[in-house]
Length: 358
Image (cartoon, rainbow, N blue to C red; front, side):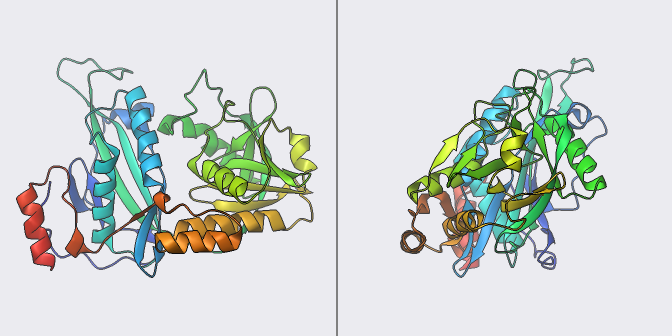
């Protein structure tokens, strides 16, 4: 692990890749890493990833629900026999916090950790395999400002179906599984839409290409159950928790395409999209054809939960919005002078780094 690091390259623009990345055990310039052509994760999709937000406030950046994201990623790693990476969520969070300090983004940030199968170990023949292959971890950060308010999107019902859970582990963000999402998104955008909603093999709504689906019906929220063929997202869980605490009814029931067409509102949730209102589906307006009041309220609850600068502010702001605060979801990125000891870095070196920054 690198100790004191050289002067960082010039700070990147607000939207774009951070100057530094974490790759295979060290911090390196983000443009430096090169993977061998034989990288197993590239050939067979044997990798897992996460998308984590870090929101900028007056007190600095705060990672949102990083513990839950990394815990899910490590569970997926065990499924793919990816064991040669930092093995605990605190280690991964420490690395991410240090990377955010080094990149010093001006605004909101999107964090992308990726763990994957790398190279065949000695005496392992070529082929599709999880054993006998080394592992690698990279983490990059992107300046990704939040638009504010509720984004409006127009979706198509895709001809592509969501793979069933007995064909692909839907509870994990496995890289190879996103080929279906890419095909569905490309199909939708070629037809002039922003995104696609996929059905499961029974013809019920599964999810959008990278987001979960909610419908507003009879004054309450309905979302497909997490036992279905979908990734039950962390943003989905956040929204369900916040809405129930705010006194809103949330049910997990199957949704048909007709349920979406006739809903008062439909919206999507994901780390990248946050809360996005679906104002039209396959050429039919949803409700009034504009973002509705429920989506706006949900977005406000979510925004408050992600950006409150400290625990008391989180509680106060959520009280004003009619919900409960969750400061435990926020991991502050402390200034460099308070840098924590990182995995692989000698404690004495960590102290020297702190002294140098003081």
